[in-house]
Amino acid sequence: DAVVFEISCFKPDTTGAERLHDIAQEVGRVLGRFTFDDISVESLSYGSPNVLVTSQLAEIHGVIKCLIHSKGFKPPWYVAPATLKKFVTGDGRAEKSDIKLAIYKRWGLEIRDNNKADAYGLAALCAAIAVEISAGLDYQKECVKTVLKSPMNACRAQSPTTAVPLDDKLILDAISVLDAANVPPKKRFRKNG
Image (tube, rainbow, N blue to C red; front, side, top):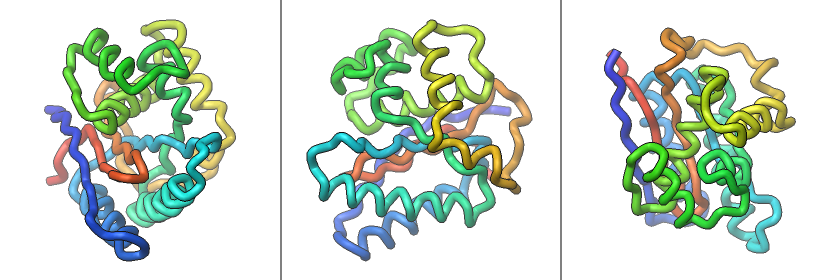
């Protein structure tokens, strides 16, 4: 199977309920167009001082969670922002510029957009979970264990799925939806059909 890696951003120009609808339409389109073996979503930053942004992001998470369920996929892996930063850089308090630099150094991919860098890190972490990482750096293995043990991910063991199972544990399909302002779907995929 050929694997194509693409990171894209969806930035609706709308607000309120219309924005949630636009996001639902785009995420639903992506979920219907590709076959995903796994999905990861950056969880909310509960320590954020911006309550409005956190509230908007929580609404978006709910929409995405419903779409994932309605399409028959397993629940997503939720990854805390600090865990994502640590997986990519080794430091849970890393800055966005550190994430982009670490991706370039480790995987040779130059990414200029912060959201796309987060998405790539989420896809890499999701891939590490799928192959039950045995290679890699100690801090990456620790991050995988953190995600697997997170109460946010307890629902994965209880939810039936009609999604396509992994046919090759080295090939992972992931969609990662990040950032309250942009809500970009980012994915590693095989086209359906």
